[in-house]
Length: 245
Image (cartoon, rainbow, N blue to C red; front, side, top):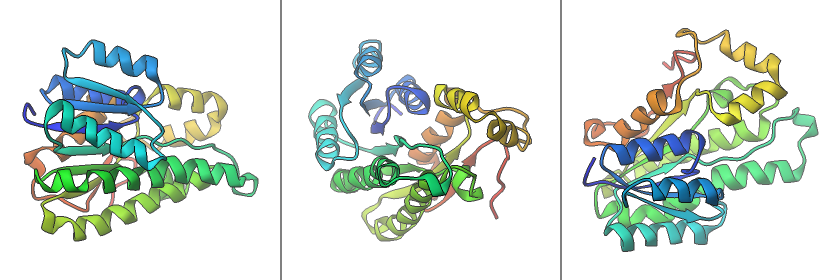
């Protein structure tokens, strides 16, 4: 992936950090966008110049524009975008507040839209690819995930429309739904152990995935020329938990 330049939102830690590291190891240049400045700077310092870090709130359109400008000024082009970042609160639907909805829709759906719109022209010039993130929790309607599930399904709908409309610009748009044991999932396990056990019991491969070994390579594939005939697809990187038809 030596010729690729990719923006990764939430790219400093968790699945996003694993994706950033994996892409850089494969030779890509990466702009990692995250609120976590300490983690982001540490990634950039250890990358031999392959990773540039931008601290910013992805729910704001100016952050997306700054990320694209950084990719172009630092690396000369933009070939890929990974919309990974998403913050939400888990609670029963009847307990969701307007602030809960704003958090999930703002960082999830609006953040994804912000970066897609900001990156379009640069990606059209390179025949680039976008990977957006969905979720098995949304596909299954998992309890206590109302705002998260709603935002994730909105992202999938947006992605399919863009796959149709932007195909003529040479831009591919696909969705990946991961199931991986991140620090966030570990905290979720502590807070909602019954839900964690319920999900774990449904994984045919018998384990939660590893962010870098099991999820990041799928994202890399969707960004690469090896997936050049794929667009508008939802790819499950979840150990077989959900088998789409």
